Image (cartoon, rainbow, N blue to C red; front, side, top):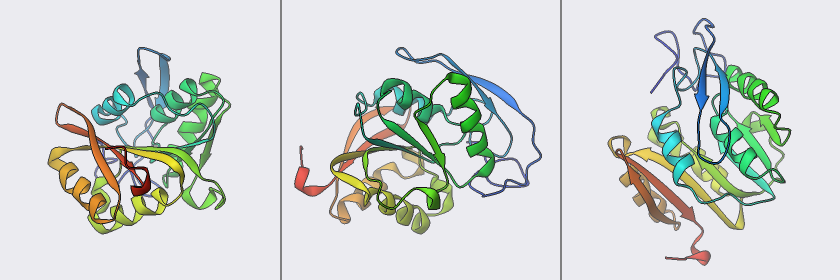
Length: 209
């Protein structure tokens, strides 16, 4: 996991790491490939994170329309994949990191994807509700802050919406699933690859399990 070098963390609003741009290629069976511009001070700048790739390869097709959320978008690999798979949907690429947001905007333009909306958390209109949420969440921000972050956005799911999270077992995926259950949510492991767990989280009245 890239943490922006010794001078800062990728979840800072304004990374302290000196800019050093690079590029990575996102290759999936159904969309792309995309050549993405990266930079120091953003998550996984040297290559697409394994967890992100597990999520993108294992999730079902996203909803065809409505609002989709890429929570913690980094430089945009997940947002671009979702936008390509659901061209009639609006994909919200949300991050606190200003450098990451600028890169996502640049990468979406380069890919010709006009259905990506880049925003800080405070810039997402309160009235927006999401048909689905996708995230490789920032585990290292700390448990209390992580829990607050996840519940804040899960509360903005549409009634039939689902949230998808990928977390490595060594970073607490199983305890996170238990915590979701303690909040009255339904969390189900949908895939397990290379130590990463893919969790689907739903509201209790829509229990499919």
